Image (cartoon, rainbow, N blue to C red; front, top):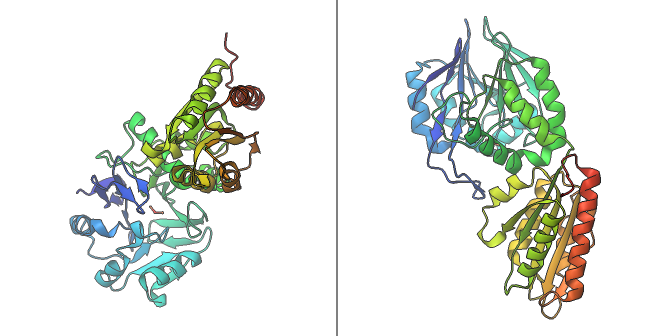
Length: 399
Ligand code: FEO
């Protein structure tokens, strides 16, 4: 572990977790992660901005010793989730006079999660400031990126924005600042898809708020820091915009080949019509990859065989995930096969009720797709092509 200079008076004291492979027992972390924390020294007071996951206790404590953090007056908690607040009880024991600085919603969560004594917490509101002497921290209350308690902290004199989870990436890297754009872009998009995408509309407003600060550095709590904030702000502009791409994501499972035959025909028909396709075999797909693929496409298709009387369980998981992540797709549908009956289409369609989409005519095949079912699939491909030609800017009619 190492302590590194971020800006004058600002040290990085967080930890790199190269080996973590799962977050929340849900989100795959193929590239590990970092938990970033920062020590800000003013002429009179010292503030710690966020902390790290409890699994990184030794590394974090070592960094605080190396940073000679004998005294901490304020511990700023931008967000109560335990990967940043887990060590707060220990920190409050170590630094007996330290005061926790956070917002009202976060305060309630810290008390619920960790039993932090109320008298050790000072509540701040939007644009409130805290003087460290020759340094000033300003707090911006930004709910729902990605919890109701989230806030940002801005170090005015150095124009450093500590953005907590916003703009983060689950990427273990020795680069303090972003240097490998290819590696970072994939990790940042995955992170956005898994964590921030449901809050796309809130983030649109926060991007303006952040730009208004004219930050010199943006320091999220996961992944590399940004010494050129325009890089991350530009990709976020694209991801949160209402613009969708000429692309269909097809998430499918198939038990005996009937659904697979429907998917193959749909994929080939779409390709013939100039529509880009990304196909995901759900039983063998990393759900993080599927989430990332949902950021841009105009259309989402779930293709499901019927198990007993309803959809294959992997397609239920996918539908739940898609509905929860609320991608900006404008069109969706379900194609399904069955042996003797069931409510596969009805069930999956009902599970996508949070999407603001036009639900295209679903298709059901009894067993292997009949000539009628195959024709319905070609008609569906025509419909998707027509919708994309009207709703996207990157559709190009094939020669
Ligand atoms: Fe990195 Fe929402 O915690």
